[in-house]
Image (cartoon, rainbow, N blue to C red):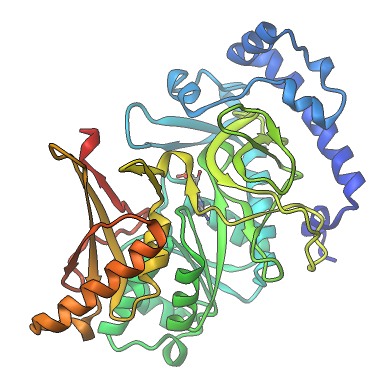
Length: 433
Ligand code: DLL
């Protein structure tokens, strides 16, 4: 066994002991150094010494994104500024950004988790890893970069964008794995088609490492078939480091959480009570090895479940279901809950349309108007009105069956909806303006 991944296979009791030790240390460290955390603990009447078992974590207060915004830029920093080697920030959609300072140790712990994740996908020395996530304040680029180097891959730091050049380098340098958002990879597939590049014939690409946004199992199959690669899921968030908090494994198709570094809980988002493994709710993380900005019971807003079954790969670290939705992604339309990923699932079952879509919600005097713009595939784009109407009806029926609402379906020309090099924006909700 490779020493990098030893903690993936620890006997469960030893893993829990390790987690408890680290949790106690983190809570004491945070209590000593971060005023907001100390105040909230004092209000709840809990002291670091009250954490005697892992279950006692439930006594601690939660942290939420607003705390990071309110304390922007450095109010939650626990380490001295002289120990900070890097900042990452995430802009969010509204208001102030959040800023996460990392110490050298934080960067190393993060690289360790990301390298283990890549190793789980089957990568190693000899692989050329093209990192096409954005470099900079976003954690995608540098996170995969450091993990890839630690594992011994040859990293090709292209960053996002400039797709034709990406494809040229992919061919010339023999890229075997690409890391980017799934929506950007769909765009890369389109550009490759236009340039007459066949991934199987012209490249050595075998792995795609996709994350930073939700993507469905149907999308995964589509990508695997079109590019002839294995599509792996990678999950993470800026607040607790970045990519590599969890990654998919071929045996379970969920995501193993590197829980010696990131302790997971699932809570009921309404009552905030912890839920047992197996039940779906909001994912909460406590960082166990970070010094710059430790996060204690950070509410991610992501909805998932921790699986109860032991994975056939032998790893003892727990598995969560793939994240298809955030609680704040949920749209309420005519009183019905709608997640964008449901629309993606429906579209991927209809021949003749591409998985590029946009949901537009417009207020009217009566019911809000739900419109879904869907791109046709080049081969089904024609002037034949009857054929187009038949396609529109097929899309309508597939979407209605899954979401239970009757949207206005508008078919649009191939390539006409915006593409993204990073996270894609699928919803335009004009009701919120
Ligand atoms: O997206 C970190 C990352 C970079 C992950 C590259 C994977 C690959 P943030 O910008 O802070 O960080 O956004 C974090 O993105 O809470 C989820 O809602 C969503 N997310 C991230 N990975 C996945 C995934 C990066 N694999 C937020 N599936 C998270 C679904 C994901 N959602």
